[in-house]
Amino acid sequence: MSGYKIVAGRANEVLSKNIAKYLGKTIEDVDIGKFSDGEINVNIKSSVRGDDIFIIQSTCNPTNDNLMELLILVDAFKRSSAGEINVVLPYFGYARQDRKAAPRVPITAKLVADMIEKAGANRVITMDLHAAQIQGFFNIPVDHLLGSMLFVDYIKNKNLKNPIIASPDVGGVARARTFCQKLDFDLVIVDKKRDRANHSEVMNIIGDIKGKDVIIVDDMVDTAGTLTKAADALKLKGATSVMACCTHGVLSGDAFEKIAKSSLDELVISDTIPLKKREDKITVLSSCDIIAQTIKRIYSKESINSMFN
Image (cartoon, rainbow, N blue to C red; front, side, top):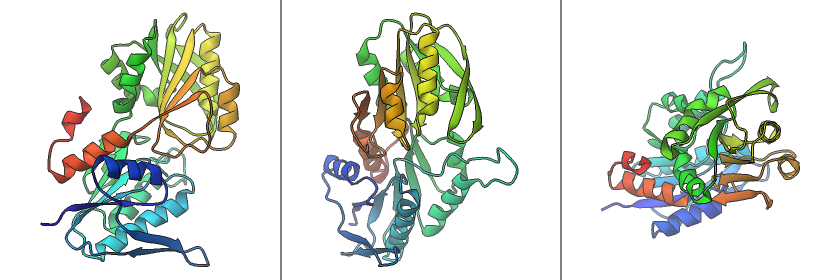
């Protein structure tokens, strides 16, 4: 009887090894390298005929290389007569352009979804998409895991005196409400104006946060400009403390310096993207258990929905 095998791309090898260890598996022996001109080369070292494959690869920086590596891995296993090819995308890059927000712009989230599907993937497992509707860009099953599954227990164990959940913008209200429902906390909204990519200006705080321990929840933190400005504004409005829970720690540019100098007390992220360097204010929670359990349930044809409770 054919089994299932774990394949690791090079984007997040530590997470892949931890997932394999949790499942009692070893990483499948695959050579991944580059030709002298930079083209990616893949060579599967043993037969995978009929085996279900789970390819773990975040499409984080260097995004283009990691995305191409993923597509080539999928193609290689498809042409090697593997059974079901499951793409495990802890972090789905190119997701921020998920609609035509302005004239003459691409919808890159749809483009990447088409590429993954066309390469030969039969299923996608991902965590905290930038927008939930991206699931509909695929014509194959998508298991969308939520960051709240990681952060809720951590927040509970903080035993904050006057906790309240904050959405960093109007678009994140649905995500924030999920946290509110699970924790029975109230909600406030940070109203911001963004005049260009990776730049924002905090305009107003909708709700009372005086004397509150504020928890900002978001799917990602990139340059940390929005997050640190929100933390500063919340403190000025009377917040006792400000913690942020952001699933994907992109942390590009001078993000580490901004976080270190800001009013933010703690930033909690997951390991869907490898942390480039340590910072005292940053705490990393592992997504290993949740992803590994999802893989196990998919292979054994058990319900995924029960995990959300």
